[in-house]
Amino acid sequence: MRHVDFSPLYRSTVGFDRLFTMLDSLAQPESAQTYPPYNIERTAEDSYRISMAVAGFSDDELSIEAHRNVLTVKGERKEEGNGEGSELLYRGIASRAFERRFQLADHVEVVGASLKNGLLFVDLKRNIPEELKPRKIAITASSAKAKQIEAKTAA
Image (cartoon, rainbow, N blue to C red):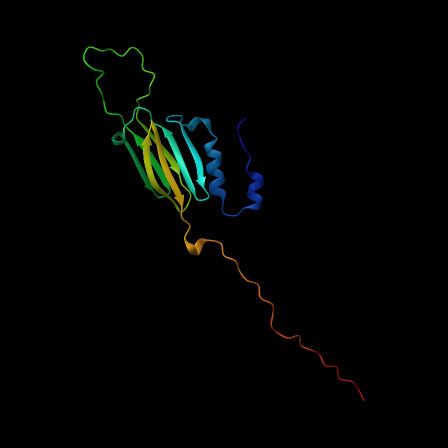
């Protein structure tokens, strides 16, 4: 059983309904893509790295596009000949085309990408604008002096 119930979190959060729906849909095995395998790691407080196993793909067969908080990585192999007189007996290395999409959070930008030893590394950085960062609000004491009530006494 891989279903997680997010209903207790709905009571204590405001405006995160889309996030919980997205997390719930990620757990659905029907729409799960398994190729190519990938890792997502945090490399610093505001930096992340996606590592994808793309063995057999060269850098000109891969394309990376970021548009409206969606990172799309595509791979399309060019047809290659096995050489003259050779016959492929078993294909264990996948050479199919793929398209993998990642939903990025707000203010996350792609910094760069590199291909090394069959792994594609995509570096991401979260740049929160200064006006959206939390700021400390100073609490000041009231400067108004307490008013005194004068009581009239009968003489």
